[in-house]
Length: 305
Image (cartoon, rainbow, N blue to C red; front, side, top):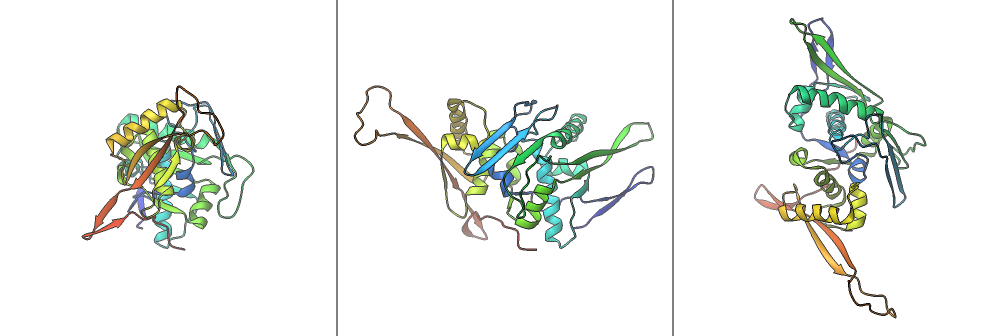
């Protein structure tokens, strides 16, 4: 991957890790589990997830928990790191990139508000505290960590005295750095991911992390709600999933809901009135055509370095 040198008006020289070439890629653990708030507004309530021997706690900064939209920055940085590894370049935890390239990759308009949101997102990513028993690179961590231990925007002044952003400098946390470099459980994102809503993003990520080849992912709707990290009530979450299933616009996957009447256990009397219904969610890979042949979507694992 070509690295670009950029000189500022004051003569400072930045060696940029951007632009990003190729697909956006992410690490499987942050796809499969709820580490981010599903909101654009400040969420001060911590996130807790405990299931299947996995424990996650996410505590807010003074401006709230890092959101699913802030996660775009984490995915962009991870993609820069993965691209360098694939090119055989040495890779550390520090990255320098332009906001322009980040906006290009995520399809964000380059408005003043977008730059303000970028600054706010970096602050939340740096301030949010995470604790998990998920090991990365064969190591576990007992304490809390933040996604970006260091994050700052570097500016210079234009001829008219206006402040102009030169570059974004960040340091990726040890946990995710080890997961990407050593575990190499890497999956590609569809380019339409960035146009999805919060619940759609999480359903897509869960589909990518659980569906391999032509295999479907079948899960109880209450389990899926916890995996998504939704704070909606069960009926509201089911309504949202029905909308996703009916629109059928989720990239790479179909979503369907199956309602099953729960039968009483043997020996238990049948009751009159309202029947208990259990909903199963089935996520199935779409088939795509490549070079005239129909191929199932496959997990894109990074080759050993």
